[in-house]
Length: 182
Image (cartoon, one colour):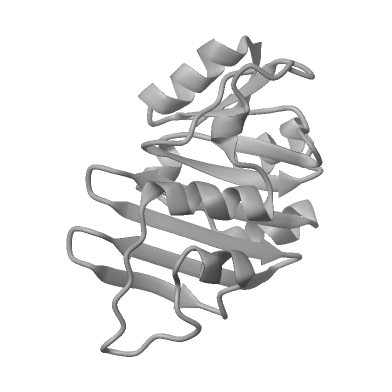
């Protein structure tokens, strides 16, 4: 397998079927590709999404398109009838986000832009992993936080899978690619 993480956005779907995820995202199924090819396509194009097979109970769907438009996580979790998580990190702008939804309900959402120090999204209460990453229990106008790419990966690892840990592990199958119909 090939890991990823920096300058990327991805979904983690509990026990997700790759074909069902592609369909729920409204993408055309392009079939399977080798891991390196799939990760590269997802990272370098705006219209492709790479979907892994189930890994430790989670299926990951990644693509630069998620940096441009965050999927409707509550709706996606409702359609797939499971927990869905969203992670995004871009170290140039220091833009870092994560969300968690299950069965149509948004549980937690956090967004941060380091260039301005602005918290752009705050929904729900931070869990233990978020608190250990330095988030306060609540925010107000005087709250200051500092979030980095490693924090996003740490939250991903606590909630599901840190995708940077995939490199070198044996692959349980190929990557499945989806693409916008346009």
